[in-house]
Image (cartoon, rainbow, N blue to C red):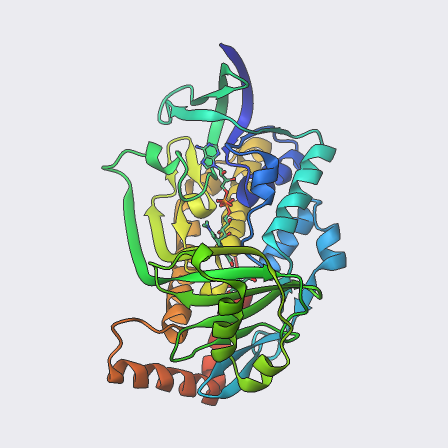
Amino acid sequence: MQTESTQVAIIGGGPSGLLLSQLLHKAGIDTIVLERQTRDYVLGRIRAGVLETGFVELLRKSGAGARMDREGEIHHGFHIAHQGRLDRIDLARHAQGQTVMVYGQTEVTRDLYEARDAMGGRVLHEVQDVVLHDLKGAQPHVTFIHDGAERRINASFIVGADGFHGVSRKSIPADILREYEKVYPFGWLGILSETAPAAPELIYARHDRGFALCSMRNSRLSRYYIQVPLSDKAEDWSDDAFWQELKRRLPEAVAEQMETGPSIEKSIAPLRSFVAEPMRYGALFLAGDAAHIVPPTGAKGLNLAASDIHYLYEGFADYFLRGEAGGLDSYSAKALARVWKAERFSWWMTSLLHRFPDMSPADLRLQQADLDYLFSSEAAQTSLAENYVGLPY
Ligand code: RFL
Ligand code: PHB
């Protein structure tokens, strides 16, 4: 069997794995990334669109931030539509000048792949049957099939950045791993269309018919979502039906002047809160969606992956460059402390804005009161803003 060695073997070539690989390479630490899909498949997934300052800084530090700085859009606030009103959260004012960057995950991933190519980084695509071995032993290693041949990589450490459905988390023994999960009784139907965004800033809408979101990728590419029952299928929603339902959930002034057009992507994502603890087992470290999932309402999924990668990068740099293991030893506790706060925020924002099927009249009035309180209290807006721009690492 062909065997090679590296300092850090990374399972998963999504944003978490690529960002870590790129940062470590720049610090002189060797990595190999193993990705199950083709590069085109990874780049075909339409996901997150809002980046926190921490993510933006990490991407710049990795050397892959130039196009984001040219093409990304800085947003100073966003809107919440409710009870016929359109209220604004002023991020810059309530979060001490902090803002968010609107730049799609697809573009981030493309930029990271190009940066990996430019540095001669090793990313193996279409690997199959990845198995993690000897995580608590003397020679941690990974075996897999690539180009029809069985291969082995010995590594000092293995990072599981292989998303929610990956193998890494499942390699932690069941008596060690604790999983916490909350599944929501609805999903988001999302479309991408080559139309001008409905408004210059994002609009999150709470409506009796269900939640809606107007987002964007750039001045000619819009991303819209509507809350739908889990039993719905994307292919059963025509573009016309989507636009009609979206408009019903938005303030009239927004709906009336909105540009519509054919969708170029349409999919349904379920909503879930999930955390796996601990995030380290021997030589294995979990990062990003492999360890936690949030419902997308606060735009935290990709941003949480970035804070994991920041802590891991610092830990590996301390270990390999300075001989100190403290950063790696405290990784799980440090990452989880931030993860749970983002879980809380995403759950709260989801609860604030969605129509749950079992809501009683009392629940509805409480939800309205939560929104009324938010826009009557500077303290409540500050709390929302500081979470939305991202809690400090
Ligand atoms: P990813 O992006 O899932 O990447 C993991 C990679 O690992 C590969 N893989 C394997 N490779 C080798 N061997 C195996 N056995 C493997 N199993 C899996 C996969 O092919 C994949 O390439 O995880 P990562 O890097 O941690 O990044 C996390 C983000 O992708 C995620 O948090 C966000 O996209 C979440 N998310 C959203 N976040 C937002 O902030 N805003 C959004 O609008 C938003 N929309 C979404 C989303 C996640 C979705 N998923 C996971 C279904 C919409 C969807 C549909
Ligand atoms: C998106 O643009 O895809 C997006 C933006 C904000 C969210 C979720 C998704 O909260």
